[in-house]
Image 1 (cartoon, rainbow, N blue to C red):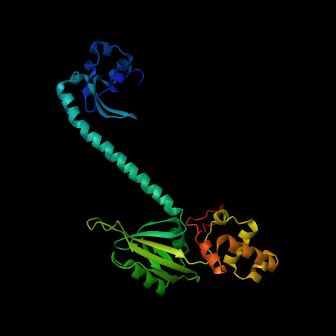
Image 2 (cartoon, rainbow, N blue to C red):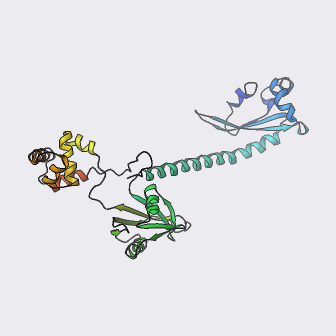
Image 3 (tube, helix red, strand yellow):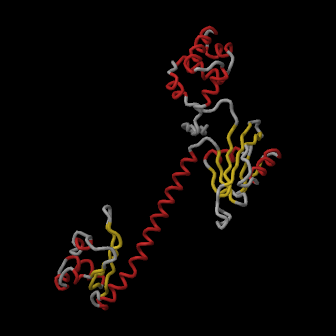
Length: 305
């Protein structure tokens, strides 16, 4: 490109303007350039037609077509053909960028869904799986509640199958509900599905229903540091709070932490004072507000929890 004597002029072309070599310099002078002798002439070209496709502060895009020596130099007919061709290429450029941008957006959203600890699955109008996030794929792999057979979800017991079918049959006007299902290993799960707004003219393999599956647990993943910062808790007070959520009773907490019951009661009183809670149940409710929706990744072969 550094040897192209036409380059500077190409950068200043107006959109859809087409030029040949003779619009910039005498053709005889062009034939003497290194650019012509070492690049164009070996290809049998005698001239170069250029049309501007795009010019912004960030980029200039041009289309160049070599004119073979058998056709002579660029003439008005070729300029007109190039001018007519330019808008079609411009549209294809725009469409290509939109497709790439959409692809990046889809990939980004998939990454976001994979970071959630709730299993999320998109189903088409015929009940086939369109997309499942990482938590959902793990749920299918465990196969205690739901499993994948081909591209469809299969429930592992009659109760779950009945619940799953009823959820997937709801329409846009139905009241959304959360159902409780029990897996083969005894774990309880909350199932929630709702229809997506979609044009009836769209293909049936487009996502039509979103299914959420969340393990029911009294011990959600909590942002302990955020709780401590919000209420200015000391490390000891935070340990007692987390023990209250996990264990409950003062004697059991004392035994678990290896401290006296009076010490537990002292920390409990400070927790009530700092949080405004009046009962241990209120402390649990407050902490539940700091549940983390994102999956915690562990190193090695450990699964996300």
